[in-house]
Each structure stands twice: as structure tokens, then as C-alpha cells.
Image (cartoon, rainbow, N blue to C red; front, side, top):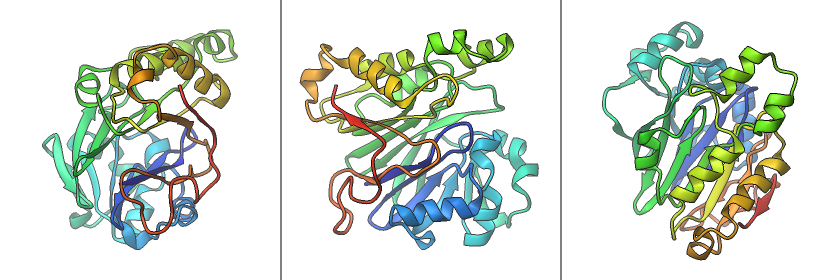
Length: 283
């Protein structure tokens, strides 16, 4: 099983997930040409993609969905509420490309996927639990709180991509107008570094190998601060004894993260050989 963030933040989001030469995207919030170039940089061709799952309708998650789906003939998976909210922005797609999700579980690119409800100021918003055999990847960004669904479904994953959007002090002392500060820090906004650390203390299990901190604010956070906050929250916690090999990284804002491989190697490339890492640390 492999994955990589292709971009992460309010300027655009996309994540590649796959196994055995088959893959799919979680969101495509970049121009389609940039998505394809980022895929090339991590060693994935568009012919490996079998669909796009859309978490919610905000433009930084759907900007390239329509063009990419039409250019590559990719089916787009989203719930009915997300489809209704993004239809105008995505544009016309063949009926065969409009996959409306009516259940919490579905199959894509040979993997079993489960919707994970998040809490965001959108019509609907979801994370995703991807399972390939015994390996699991949990993805949850764009949420103001840790929802009961996140807490129930994301414990004990082999890898996690979790939002660490802002530092509380930087947000409240920063330049944002008060209404926007309240929105970011509110129930339907974004997780802080501290909230991410608290969630990881609960979710990380003995099998957890990789954590990627994602969707960092350019204004109210830094990669070094997000990493430092989370690592310090985990240091001395029982999780440190459970998974001594755990690696925590930060998703680059504008560039693809290196391809991370869980379990069997994909071809002759191992984790860390595709693209320069943005950062890594052990708790």
C-alpha cells in the first residue's frame, strides 16, 4: 500500500492512495496539469488511477476534479450532498463518471474504503479509511473537532494523514479578522496542532508506522512548529513504547510529499527515494 500528498493546504489539496499499481485520488484541488505533474514526480502515471473521491465541495478540494475526470476518463465518487454542492464547479461529466455514494463503505482500486464523518463548514464533509488486506490508512482533514466517527474508525491505523492546521497562539495573535479566527478555531473549522496531538495519543497503535501532518495554515502555523508540538505531546506518552519506529512528517504545501510505502515495496522504490521529504521525526 502506498500514498503521498500531492499538495496540502488552503491553496489546494490532493492525495494519492494505491496498491499493486492501482490507485485513486482523494480530492483534486489543483489545476489538472499540476495534479498530473505531481503524480509523475512520485512515479505514478494517470493510467494507474481508477477514480477520484471528493471529501467536500470547497474549491481547494475540487478545483481540478472536472477537468481531470474528463481528460483521464475517471469516475468521481462523492455523497449526494457533496455532488449537489459541487456540480456547477465540476461541470458536466458522463453519467458513468458520477458515482453517488449512498453507503459508508465502497470499493475502489482494489481497496475497501469507509467514509469517516468530519465537522466542517461545508454541506457535507468526510475523511476516509482505506484498507488493503491488513493494512489501513486513515485520512482526516478539514474538521473543527474530533468527531465520534473519527474516534471510532481511525484508531490503530498503520498510517494516518491528519490535519494540523494552526497554532492557537499564532491564530489569535495574528492578522486574521476576528470572525475568521473564530471560524478557523470553531467546531466547523480546522484542527490545531494541539488537537492533532491529542487525537494521535488516542489513535496510534503498536502497528502505526507513519503519520503525516497536513493542511497547515500558511499564516498561522509552520511545519517546524506543527512537528515540534505533536512530537512533544507524544514524547513520554505510552504510545512511545508501543511504536518506537513511528515516523511523523509534514505534508508540503505546494509540492508532492515523497511516496510512502506500507508493507511490500512498490517496484524497486522504497519510502523516501521518490521525492525529497519535507521533514521527519520520531516522537
